[in-house]
Image (tube, rainbow, N blue to C red; front, side):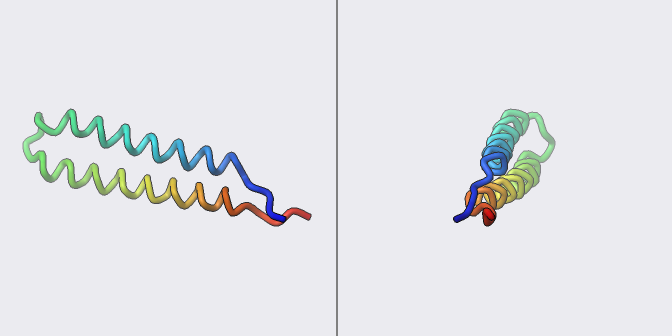
Length: 68
């Protein structure tokens, strides 16, 4: 039987939420930028990487580890 690690799951969900908030904040700042398209491209890539890492951490936590 595997024991789930809910701390990893919570950390993954938190990272996904932070990435969404970061991208939403960058949407608000884009009109003031000299190149809004490039700014949102970079912000989207950063948010996508953070979301991917959060999903990976969450899945690792759900898979868990073998209990003795």
